Image (cartoon, rainbow, N blue to C red; front, side):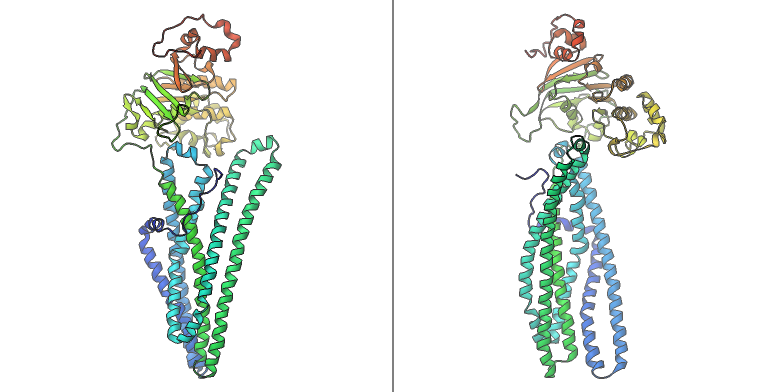
Length: 615
């Protein structure tokens, strides 16, 4: 079975549909392509002239003992070389610049598309594979545009020019030169097959190494904690050995191919010397023509070798473009409507209406696949509502749906009476301030991690937010204050500090709706007290939805929604739910067994909308 991190199998070595799509990226730079092709055309002609000048120098001046003309031939030869150098330089600069611009365009398109894809896509695709699309695969396309697509015309034009010239000089020697071409074609065909398989093996090995490194570097603390360094090293050594072996096979294929082509080319030269030498001795062929033929034959086989290399570039580009276009063709299923309803200044009323959801791609999920089943409740503007339940009850899924990271299978979610699917995504999500259990800290400064690029948030607002969430004293003690650099994922910060920074981030953006998902589950008691104080300020005047395992943090909420196995089973405030002695009562007892004597007597409170506690 293929690994989750394996690269897809390669498609065709050449696919016309893919090439048409790739050429679309060249269209904005057609003037550059035209100029590069003109340089290549002239360079091919100049390459065909040089051996002919050698022929003229030998036949007209050297053998005729005419030293005067040699100076002009030498100057002309030098001029041809100089012009050829300038043209080659210009062509290389233009094609490389074009390749870099196309790489830039494709990477921008990929990243832009990735930002618009739904979270379900990222649930199924490893980060390493997506990074490969933006880096390695795009680099392979750069090789095609900068070194393959345009320069292949140069090789073909050079071959054509040489064939025309040598047929014009002496068709018998030309045919003799062509006798080794079928052998070169056979050798090239075998090489392409071997190189294709080697390329596939190398790509698979690189994918395995990338996946292994990403996983083990991220989990290095666990590896060291459980003394798995030796085992991890052995695994990496095995994967690295496969990569070495795959590269060795590729090197072997090249090591055989190029010497064989060189030998065949030398064989052609030997035939020319043998046959042409006899023709010279019979005064049928001039010495200059023989020398020119030897030079032409050497130049004739060089583009053939280059074309074989271009084939490998083409193959790599086809494989990479297939993977890139597969990513770009992934439909954006969650997007703003063409004519979105205007969110504007909202009140913060939230309503779930008979919501059903499954992470399955099936059109008809099984009963076990439903994560949420017929969820209905309403949160009033400015109300604080807690959602509790066992792990896997669907609490976090509710919040993901509210932020429209996923769409419901059935039912609707309303914000101020409007279906969130009819609202602009940007307008919708800017209404939320979210604090998660696992806070993500970006590389940058403390200030940039609070602002997150929002231009209208000034330094005073950032400082006020830090004060309100009890983070200001910590930041003030840093050497550079708010300008202090934080490392990737905030490794230099404690869990509590990162959590407080997330609160400051949410407060600075002044959201209308606050979502707290296990925001205090990973902090110590002292930090939790600071967070509770921050919460009081943060929730003031806002609709607040709190997901928490620690029931101590939600006892003052206006209402508590109890979920179990994807369904809403109880709704009420803290005292009402304890009095019902249902699911919430049992959750409370699990955390506060020593406080059972404080629980009020079991007085059943009617709740006709949500009846049927779990027995």
